Image (tube, helix red, strand yellow):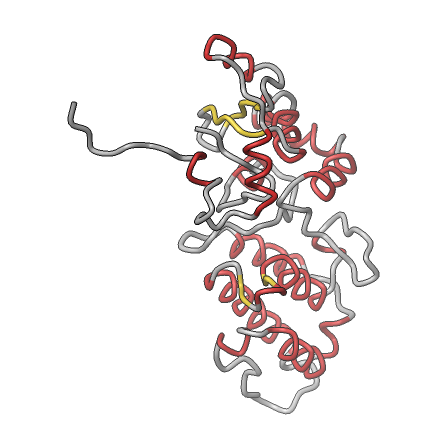
Length: 256
């Protein structure tokens, strides 16, 4: 019979020509699978190396049972089952546990971070410089010298301009030219950010103001850019922060 196309999906991911990492290909090949009569077991338990979880849109997706997918399933069976008005209380009660599991098991880690390597439980516990450094750490691919996506470079640029608005007039002296004349200055960000922090030293010690925390959350979820690869807050939208994905083949492997 004529057809419009053939869906090969995961079979193609393991080919030599595919750009997936070798470890991802090994995971796909190593999944034992099950006979057709048994595959629905994935909805309730690990079956043939696969678990079925609910997508952001509420649809079932079959994934290889990595640590990240097991956490996804755990949250589907707990907080994501609750009515939205009851989720915040659950997250308050399990805050430390959730943050710990995001940092150890999931491809989208908790954003909160301090320069000494400790975890910041809230954006308001971070300095402006720490927010900037964390953005670069999570969105700039160091080994390849590139951003995950150009839109995330520009997101960082918009944040830096907000920081300038906050600190440019601290020492007086009238209007000042922006240190960030073009987002291309962030193509290789480390040297620029070092100079930026030196120009605005208060940004290295001042904790985020509440309005700047709100600004950061707003630009992190705006339309027209790639979803951010981190979770900055445990709120009523936690399921969206958690499940809204770009390609996360390192820990979320789709099976078709």
